[in-house]
Image (cartoon, helix red, strand yellow):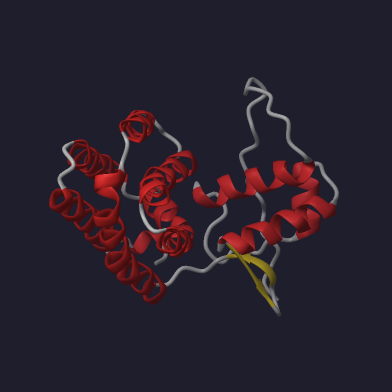
Length: 230
């Protein structure tokens, strides 16, 4: 049997703004951040009693949070080891990004002519925040919001829903690689700037090309990052 892990999870700073959260929401937020920041690595066992003790809560909100994270794809339930942080694989990564390479250019092609000025302004604010964001978890969340804001606002709702599922499945890979490749974040920020520029000019082909290059660059970076465990 695998030994129980020694949990090292960063808790919110005492000086952080107070946000009203249930115990369930608090646990989910802390664990999600720990996974995306690499504090809880791929394959780590998540023992409910130890997590509850670390976070000073009962096991009930821990159990509920683990179920939520499993729905998001960050946690898996193994019949022998219990809850574990989802284990990454290059095969899984390849499948996810092959699908994204087909579907996201299609969604962008649908979206460009329907993108509003207010949406472009929202994307610019997101992009600005991402340029200054030092934490992997927050950057990963904003990255997903950036892309989905375009697809959910202006593309087919059914297509956007499928892409959201694939985006959710991607967050583990992005979070893991950001720990070891700071240049990946810098390159992605440059790609987002190119997407924004194409959207503002309503240049369909430029927007599609920017998305395709963004996804292909990510694939190469992830597959070459052996330190991320992929």
